[in-house]
Amino acid sequence: MDEKSLLRQKKSDTEHVLPPVSDLLKDEHDRSFTYTDLHGESVKLDLMEFAYQDANPLPMPIDREGYCSQEMTHRFWATGFSDWRNVLDAQRRFLTPVEGNKKIRLLDFGCASGRLLRHALTFSPEDVEPWGCDFAPANIQWMKRHLPKSLRSFVNTAVPHLPFEDNYFDAVTAFSVFTHIGQLEEAWLLELRRITRPGGILYLTVQNDASWTRVLKRPSAFKRLKKANEFENELTVNEELFSSAMPKPRIVFLMPGVENYSYNVWHSNQYIKDSWGQYFEVLDIAANAHVNYQSVAILRSR
Picture 1 (cartoon, helix red, strand yellow):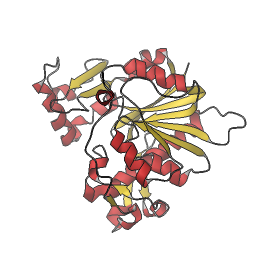
Picture 2 (cartoon, one colour):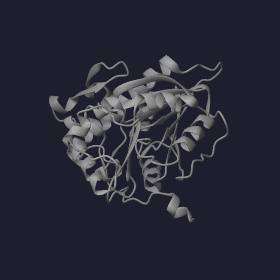
Picture 3 (cartoon, helix red, strand yellow):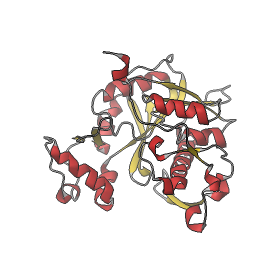
């Protein structure tokens, strides 16, 4: 198997970028953003209170992995910022401190073009040592070119192996990654457990029971999933399916004509507790805490 087959070849636009987010907040409507925190509460933000601190350019839509149109670039920034606030909350609540550690060593696994990491660099430079990896070289190239050099990033492959010694990181995040790993899920979980120190945490977003109940309220998500009928799936995607509870503990939809996101994976809360709970202490499953849709599984190594 050649190296290219283990990487993701994607279109990119590293030459053109958009201005910092503070230049894009044109009116009161743009400045207002609401997200779900780890306690299930809605939090309303005035983005301008924070946006002026981030002077870094923003990626074009082609380099955002589907997060927001160009007209909604300010909301792309806001999703990363709200996720970062939730990650900080998880660290405060669940991360066991290590005496003498001055910075939290954090890996964003599947970091894309730094949607989350740009906020670690901006708002927590003295507290966090940020790392990022992605199996699309174009995403890493974008970050190396447009984000501060203090961000350490590298290209990983689709094989469950990362170039770190055991117990290297205090925390690992993964946003909308395990929602697309149809195979090798356990192998990747074990690899992330290997590189996370005892007392460290994993912060992984999932499509779970809470997400399932919101599909019909998100027409674009439902339309996308209906295309799965074109494959020989066991389940027929229709309104009746999503009007009831998840019919299986783990569901993998095959998506037609989608090269790198061909798996659309769902995990019930019970599956996470039973299967992932073999390897981790399941500390919390925060409903809809990522873009008000995906939930967050917060884990600690057993």
